[in-house]
Image (cartoon, rainbow, N blue to C red):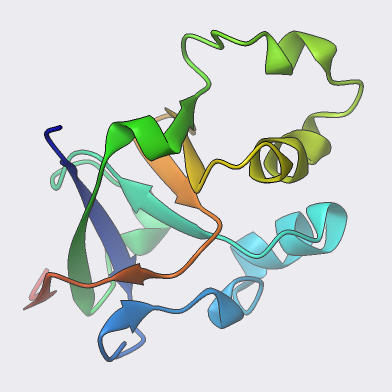
Length: 127
């Protein structure tokens, strides 16, 4: 199966893997971590598209994953989203069902992973 490329932006100099222990360390992820309790990392599917607060990131990490390992929120083929009473539970429910993460959108096409992932390439950004 063809893998998809994932792009993770950070000022942290990761060695070998994107580490979930940093989730919640930033002001924009702290509240999400506190509400859901599920450590995770965020990736974009398009190298050129990312949220404005990541424009100053020093590094772009590239990883790859098989899409079958991810639950697609856009199609919601198993009706998981419809079953939830609280959207903060989405990460916990999908992780419990055995997925490594999910594909969705936060205004940009993105992937959320619940496990660390090996870095294939690190780019030092100048923008």
